[in-house]
Structure formats: structure tokens, C-alpha cells
Length: 426
Image 1 (cartoon, helix red, strand yellow):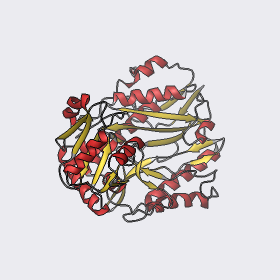
Image 2 (cartoon, one colour; image 1 turned 45 degrees about the vertical axis):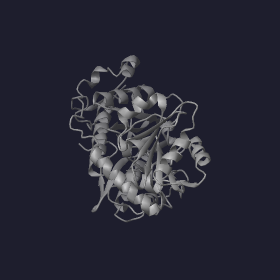
Image 3 (cartoon, helix red, strand yellow; image 1 turned 120 degrees about the vertical axis):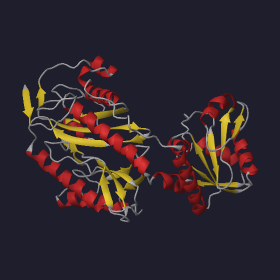
């Protein structure tokens, strides 16, 4: 079999030309998994101009956090290892059963709690507070935290815990500091993180551009008989050649009707649709892009619903306006589909999930484009736009591009697919 389609890949693997999907040309799985596939030798790292987030920006984040703490009437915020700790301090510390925490009081010097045998490693990393208190294996780290708060004049008060704080940490604090009230720190942590700075948006833009380049290279290699794992290995190798860690996934045919795919193996066959998803990280900031295409001649039904999906994505983007509620974006996309006879609500055939999610240092983060979310859209907020259409047992179509809010309205990170036959803008 030899299927030919007009060119939509430019610069893929360092070359331009017609997009040719051929028959039984073999792919060596070990070469793909090793990331040494020679077909990506034309790809070069795209990260030479990346500017990491600096300490001055992190100081501004801490200052903003303290302003938000005052508004939420929180006397201190406690953060474990994870994305929020990196966001505020630059410290990347893995979670274990041994407590490692950062304490940010509303007033006074921030402090750190670390296992004693990890003190040297902790001091190598910690900034934004020189008060590092350590605990031995047979000691209670939570008493140290309470003592640290007491040293800052807090014998009682309201303590905010980051949303991903594990229960044993909360329980240990509750037992050690009975005079404190423990509340959600979301108004502070999410309140800071959901509004991106120009430096953050620049890093996200770089991540988006890299993932588009990876897609172009991998799409040029799609062939009949390819498995999902082979596609995924190519996606990892392409991102690696571009200088980052990332990946692409694909679902073929009826497996694409499951929003997050199937665990069953499935090789690509003539007449299949292909549903992809992918992203990477640049200095901790994420990309998230999906494309839907046809392998060979698409059915009339698939083409018609692909066009409808594009209209829904466009309607969602038009509804993203400064101070509009986040739910308005979801409502705009859903109206296009219900007016065409799909749904209603989350019923399928139709859109079974929210239209989009916040994105930044986490692939999914505050805030969400979903019914009931009346939070107004503000400059600096970043979102995915992905109103998927599901036809159970047949196929799914998700077109996903990210956008960010400005004073003048929404702006795309990546341009949406112009048509079914052209996944990316030339």
C-alpha cells in the first residue's frame, strides 16, 4: 500500500516535501527507545536562548504571597516539596516519609525544616531564609515547626497548607500545634501561580514551539502498522533531539473514542483516524498540544465532526475576554456542539469533559474552563482550549492549543489547525 497526501509538513526532520505514508517499511523499536533514531539528525536543540526564572522574580512572588496572605488572614503558609516549592524558592526536593518543609510567615524570615542527615544537601539548595532547623530520625519534626512559628511571635494563628500537602504532615502539625487553625493556602499559592509573568509566558512559548517541531518531525514518519508505543518512542526521541524531555502519544481508530486512550495495543491501519496529545517542559514550564488527523481518506462523518470541533475551539477562544467568567469559555464551545445536535451537557456523542484547564509549571493547574467557575479571566492566566468530540466506539476528535490572557484579550501560544489536511500552520 502507498498512500500520498498533499504536503503539510515543512522542515520535518530537516527536510521539506510531500507527506508520504508508505507501506511495510520497518521501524526498529530499540533504536526508537534509545532516542538515537537517525531520522532526527536534522533536529537541533532549541533552548540556547532560554532565560531561567531568577531570584529577583521569586522575591516578587514571595512579596505577592504575603500580600495575599494578608487578604486571606493567614499568619503563615507551609509548603512541602513539589511544584509550589520550586515556584517560590527554586528548591526541587523529592517527597518521602521524611518531612522537609518551607515555612513562610506573614512577617519575619522564612524557615526550613529538614532531616538532620540531609542538612548539607538542603543547605546547598535553600535560599529565601537561612533558618534551617533539622531533626534526627527519632525526633518529631512538627515540634520544630511549632517552635519556629513561636519564635516569630505566633503561638496561635491561622496556618495555610498548600493543596497537595499530605495528610501525615497536616496530622503531625495538628498534634504538635493545637493552638493553630489549619486552612487552605490556595488563595495564596494558586493566587500567585495562576497569573503568569512575561518571563513565564516566554518559557511556555518556547515549550509550545518545541512540541510543534517534534510533532512535525514525527508526523513525517507515520506509517501503516505503526504501534502506539512506536509513535510514543518517536515523540520522546524528537523532543530529546530538540533539547528537552517530552513526549507525544497517539490513539488509532476506535481507541481514540476514549478521552485518555486505551491500554490495549493497536496498530495503525488504512482508514484510521489518529488522535494525538503531547508536550514537554522548559525550565519547568509545560506545553500541551493535541492534533486530530486521518490516515488515508477520512469518512464524511469524521470530516464533518472535525470541522465542528474546529468551530467549537474557535468559539471558546472568542469567549475568552478579560473579566469574563471562566465558565463562559466552556459554555461557548458547548453551545456549538449542542446546536449541532450533540450532547447536551456531558452526554456523548458530544463533549464529556470541561473545555480546558490552567497550565503552567503543572500540565493541569488552577484555574479551569468549566461550568460553575465564575472566576474572572485576568491578564497572565494561561489555558488549554480542547473541547473534544466523542463518538463512542468510533472515534474521538480533540484539537488542543493553549492561549494566554492579555489586557486586550486572548492570544494563542500555537495557531490552531487550519484544516483536517493541515495540522499546523505552514
